[in-house]
Length: 202
Image (cartoon, rainbow, N blue to C red; front, side, top):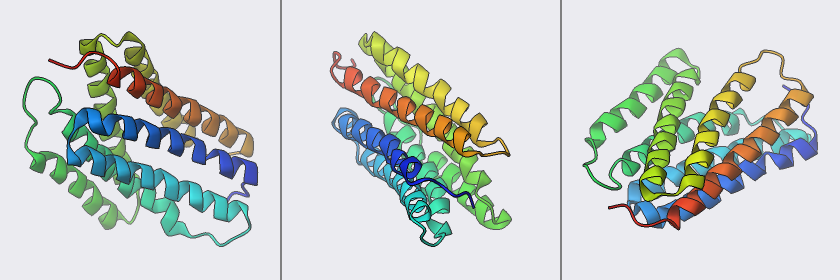
């Protein structure tokens, strides 16, 4: 277990706050309870991970369930958000069971292998769908800044994944990751602000 400095643990709350702001902005825009539920789960997942890091940095016990819960909450949350977003604008949402089955398959696989990597796959796929859908909605609405900001968020998400996959997780690398994560979700929140203030989708 890494010896996290308290300052690094506190910075971990910044991307969570940015994500919460984005979800709050998008809830009245999407106008579907599944998006509100999914966004809340995603924010909760990030918050639990930040709380876990704060406890560890403060010299407390390693409450591993707080760290591992984020994958299940993020995966389920982004899956619900993606499904809800597909109903914004023209066209119809695909059947909910397709998305629910995808998330449940990830949960079942994680339980079978006793590891969280299946839910990491679910999270990555669902978050990509969320980002692409928001980018397309922003383009349709003529919100050009939002298009670039959501695109930046997508690229930043994959960059974060590559950094987190490195075996040597030094404190310096953790600072780079947290800084990028904060900028990444701040861009997402700003993109949500531009999108929700653009002309309504036909």
